[in-house]
Image (cartoon, rainbow, N blue to C red; front, side):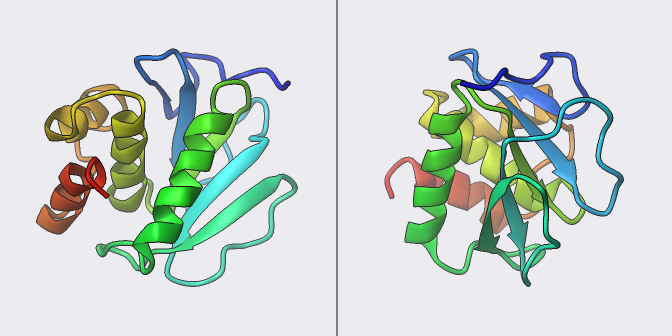
Length: 144
């Protein structure tokens, strides 16, 4: 089992269970410190190659995942792996899609869906989850 993130590391969000997940924007340089062991890339097109295991979710900017069942499976895997691995969730800018995915991880971790966006804005970035449909997606994620 791999060590987790430093809980005060750049972009690292703690979930109620103690799992730590790093969110970031791929347009910015990789933060200093340990590399992820698993990443979820939320992009409209294929992501750049990385040296660690990753999954690509086709997710156009300002939109929703192209395949919701695949998104649920990949986010479930990320949440599960975050119990003992360094998991990163990343889109181009690190706010909208990343914030939406982090809010879904918070729902999987037991945060009520109606509170998950506020949780992510408080614990990750104040402008995370950028569009009304992304907020609705998070609320609906609990029932998917």
